[in-house]
Length: 420
Image (cartoon, rainbow, N blue to C red; front, side, top):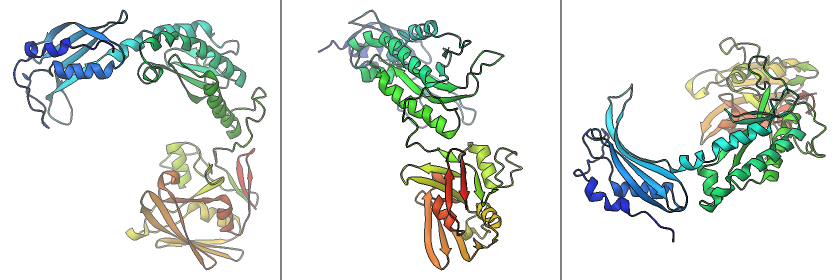
């Protein structure tokens, strides 16, 4: 068994300045003693669970309010760290200031500091400035920027080499501990190859993921995950086609979302991003302004189809307001039909298809609406977090097209849902 420090417990009598003050909602008196050695010992043992250590010294850094700093040393290597027990002032602009107690140990940050600077220096030495179209590394972030799959492979090879700098730590702490407490996370981003004229930093980038360096990196596994994220960018049209991607990378992938809909060749005028939030004329504009793209339809892996978000007017009929749907009104009109809305409902008619919807409200995390279509009544519901547009519901694209007697054709390459 590794040596565990017991000297902290022996200090209990020496450092005990009186009975510990009881903690309450109002904190503790300013002259309360800082947490004692037993509490400090527990915090240190939790922060340093695998490596033996011993107490070197302790010092009362402040008498009132009291702060005691303990200096500890590893019994297995040249490593010194500290634990701090203190009474400190809690200041808030909303409530009166008060004193409270705190315990901390910097073992994790000291171990992290053994490697971080060397990792950043190694990556900086191995990666150029991107001026010739190569990789770009920004240590302040830290992030690696790539512009092709070949560069992504190169980035993971470099990260695998630099990850070896952490291997000595595995003699003192297991890989999982290092991953959670002392690793260095490096972001990997795709960019379009453009560098800013002001600071030379990449522009037009998309984040692919983060790679943790901890001495046991599986570079191939990380490459697979980042490659999938990159391939998804290509499928979504956010990155151009890349011939260096492995064969089959784009198979079985679908666009994350589609924000264009046409009805018999005419475009539904979402006008996303063309106005401010306050001047928006439809809920999809407002949602796009708040959340970005992907507000009209999204791919559902679970259901194996695109789900269309149908806005319900943003008003619960039980509160006495009117409920309408901008999207249904637009589609019905472009299909040559009629539309009306009233107290808690909206209705439409297209080529002998008569429909009516009522928003039923939010319950158990789901939005629900009642749909009547040519005399058949069903309930349409979805997770409220997926609805995105306030009181909206989602439905499969084929079901949405059927509301108007139309068929749906999805052109994923062009990013458009065609209702014909």
